[in-house]
Image 1: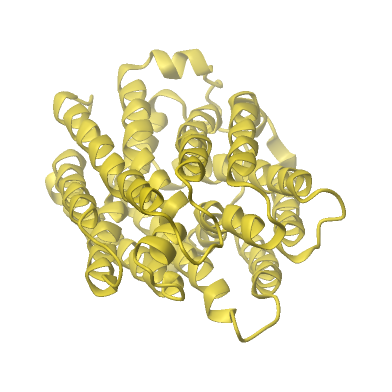
Image 2: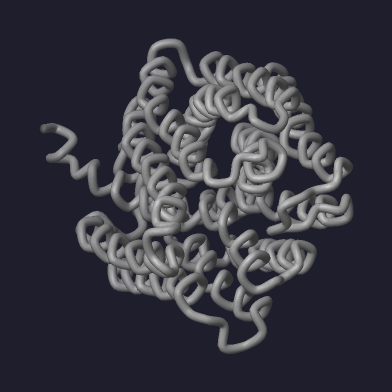
Length: 408
């Protein structure tokens, strides 16, 4: 009842919509355009990387704008949700009226610009919602990230569930997403408030803060394994495990495990502290990635178990790190816009790295997107990229976290 009075379910619903427009689109969109319109993986990776270079300028600017909207904040933020919905429809439900690669670039630019602006404002609003107590940030994060992970689950499974049922499953998904976005915007409307009385903090001041800088670096390294596995998930299941048709169910297992584990990690962090709990989760991730490197054709059940374990470990990453950063922003940047502009940029850069490096490397190894038979070199490469590389990156993140002392 207290959560209802505090309108925390509205944060869960809005987080679900944002999450549905984020990671699942990186999972589905490149493969969809490669399979449907014959766009090369290298070209798609180049477009996605170009967008991330654009974000270097865009996200800090959006953070600056978000801190200065004042009374028009409700109207501007809600209008941006409309852009998010229309961009999703354009990406998946409209036959490209121009060259597919250019239409992909145009619609996904609109999608991710709206996503960035909404994410910055949403997390900055969370700083004001959580109040001054440190436990308030972890509690809000549990509601917010649980909603986000459930949103990812739904967005991940709907297209595959609709395959064979409707003629164009991605068009139906896009239409349903647009409706859900408008509903979430309606319930979130009362929550949008203007800036606090505190002066806006400059980006250089946030980067100069030791704790904030450490958290940003940790987020960059720690999020990269998830970006790598997300980019290659569909290709790994379809080709390395030789299990076409299992993608949706396995994705749901992964994200459902993350969603269910989020409140547990939150409770453990409130009792034992964020850092030791996060370390345990990161070790679980390394073990799951390492075992995945042993899998081959037909190993669907072992991989399903891995999806549960690795999904649970990701639940800690997505719950605790944003809460830790929000707690620090409440101290040094109460308006939050600039800080979460940087946070958003760091997390999206990992996805850009995955797209621009992994997709061309996979294509150069002889991998044929949409093909029924893949050469041995391509299968070996996808295992290295999907399992071995994330293990190494996660070990680096663990070393960094162990060596880092955060200011409480």
